[in-house]
Image (tube, rainbow, N blue to C red; front, side, top):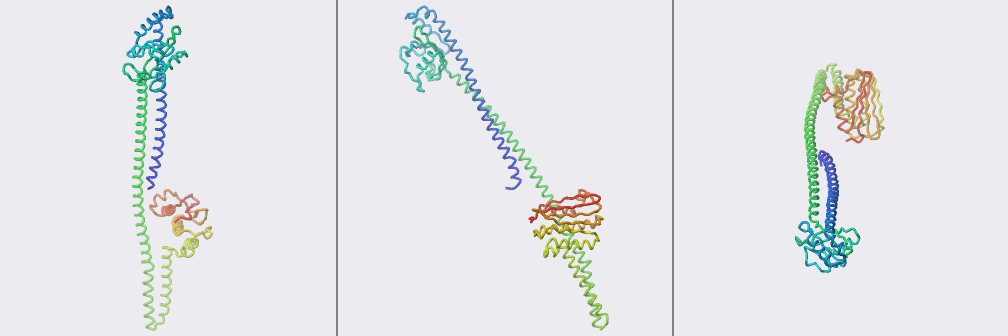
Length: 449
C-alpha cells in the first residue's frame, strides 16, 4: 500500500473507531435511559391505577354499608348487597366481583356462568392460581394483585391489576380490577419513542462521521494532489538541473580538451615533425627539438591525468576516501597558498562508494567556494567518525555570508548542491557563518548506499 494511502487510513480508521465507540455508548445509555423512562412511566400509571381501584372499592363499600352494618349474617341483606354490587360498573370492562373464603364465586356481573362455582383451583395460561392469589393478597392486607383473566369484551386472556378486601362479617372477598392493555400500549409507545430517538441520534452520528470521513478524504486527496504536483515540479526541476549540469560538465571537459590537450598535442606534433626534418637533414638542433617534444608530451600526459582526476579521482578507488581528500587538500594548499589543516579520524572505516564520492565532491565544492569567495587565511578540515555516521566539518576565517540568501540566489550551484548531495543519502547539512568564521558541517549515515 502506498504511503499516502497508509496515512489516509491512519487518519480515517481511528476516526471511524472513535465514532463507532461513541455510537455504541450512545445506544447503550439511550437504551438504559429509555428502559428507566418506561419503568418510571409504567410505575406512575400503575400508582394512579392503584389509587383509582382503592377509590372504587371504597365507594362500593359505602354503597353496601347499610346492609353490611345492619344485617350481619342476614341472607336477605347479603343478597341485597350482591344486587347493588352487580349493578355497579365503570367503563366497558370495569365491574366488581365477590368470592367467599373458600374460593366460590358469589357474584360476577360480566361472567354469570361462574356464579356458584368453586374456583379455588382455577388456573390461567401461565399456570397460576388467580383466586388463591387474590384471597392471599386480601388476607395479607395489601390487596393488590397482578394476574391473568379473560377479558369479557374480547374473550382474550389479559393481564389485570385487582384490588381486593375482606368483609370478615360475611367471609366475603370484595374486589375490582383494571385490565392493563392500555398500560402496555402506553409503555410500548414510550419504548417506540425512545427507539426512534436512538435511531435519530445514530443517524446524526453517522452523518457527522460521514462528513468527517469525507472531509478527511478530501483533505487527503487535496494533499495528495498538491504533493504530486510539488513532486512533479521538483522532478522536472531536477531533470533540468541534471541536464544543465551535464552540459556544463561536457562544456568544461570540451574546453579543457580543446584549450589544453588539443593545443598541446598539435604543438607536440609540430615539434616531432620539426625534429624529424632536422634529423633527416643532419642539422644539429634535431635532438634538442626531439627532447622538447618529449617534455611537452609528458606535460600533455599530466594534463590528461589532471582532467581524469577531476572527473573521478583514482586515489578514491585505490587508497580510499582519506587519501583522496588528503591529495585534494595538498593540491588546494599549493594552488591557493592558504594554511590548511586536515584531520582524519575515520580510522580506516570503509564507506559505501556513494558516501565516499559524495564526501569527496562536497570537499571539492567547499574548498572551491573558499578559494573564490572567502578571502580566508586558514582552513580547518576534519573527517570524524561517530557511532552510526560520518561527520565532515570545514571551517575558515573568511569574511562570512548569509547562508539563506546565498542558497536562494545560487540556483542549483554551490551550497545547494552540497545540501542535495547530503539529503539524497539521508544526511544533513548545517551552516554557521559570522564575520570572522564560517563552518560547514555535513553528517552522513555510515551505511548510506
